[in-house]
Amino acid sequence: MEILIPTISSIGGGFFIGIILGYFLKKIIKILMFVGGGIVALLLYIQQQQIISVNIQKLEDSSTFILTSVVSSFDKMTQFGDISSLGIPLTASIAAGFTVALAKS
Image (cartoon, rainbow, N blue to C red; front, side, top):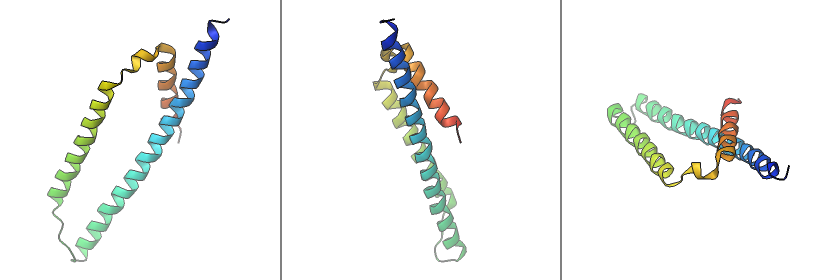
């Protein structure tokens, strides 16, 4: 029984951490999508009113570059931290909590 207590606490704690991380990530993505959509909608409205001229191709190229840079940065961050050193129960419970938080609406 004494051997199971640290394992059970790491599973429960990891699950809770996973839920918090998933919830935070989901909210941040929603906020960024709202702000980005608002900026694009504002630019297109101002262009429709003929106040400014927007080059849609350059806007698309810039957004693709930014998205590629973010993904590249995320890949580099995950290479430094090896989550497998945390142990199977903690890693699995974090992943399960993260999945549950992202799946809930």
